[in-house]
Length: 103
Length: 169
Image (cartoon, rainbow over all chains, first blue to last red; front, side, top):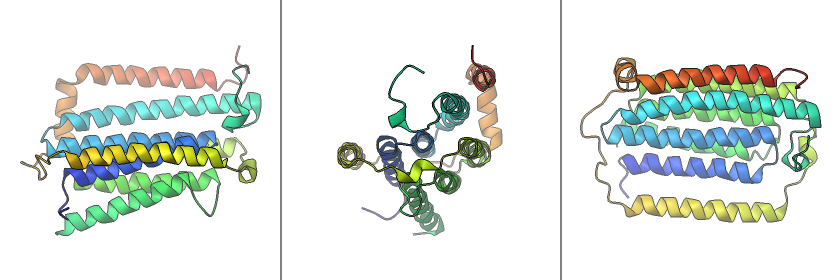
């Protein structure tokens, strides 16, 4: 493996970061930390897209990352509002306490 | 190995280290520390974006993630008084099963990366992801998605206001 940084180096970082986020979603039981892990996964996808955009000499990947960041911001605001509304009803932000669909 | 390569290794190590500390901090299980390490992850990732000549996205990454998203997280953490986090134990079974599944996914993805022949391991020509180039593309070829995303933001805003009303009826 050569030490000069190429596309595969960025992809390896992206995959590792994605798996970290996935591990966080699977392991942690706090809704907010699960949400942060989702953000990590989105960021990993962004890194892969920017790297592909750079090494394929094409700006479309960066446009897609721009849209992903925008949608992620909207998603975070809605999701956090849902968590707050849920917390008001159930007084818990733990997934084990939120096992039933009835409020 | 030039300076950009060294910087790549520094930023990549910082990103992964802070990413680990977001999901599993051995010293504190407080969500606030997770949010703080998420800020560090996002900032070092902006460094990686700069190394990839995506200057506009690096700025947007810091502005939107570190500036808006994490602040929102911190607000919500302080709004919900999350103190009982420390007492709970992680189940051993879910720990083992989760790490096996995620490890398998990591191995498959990494093997597929190294199995493919690296065609363009070096950038052929330099493209600059600066504001002018991205803006030109955004307002010509991608004008419709841009407008749709602005409507999406409006919808999200209305939805958040509705959801945060005290009595939902």
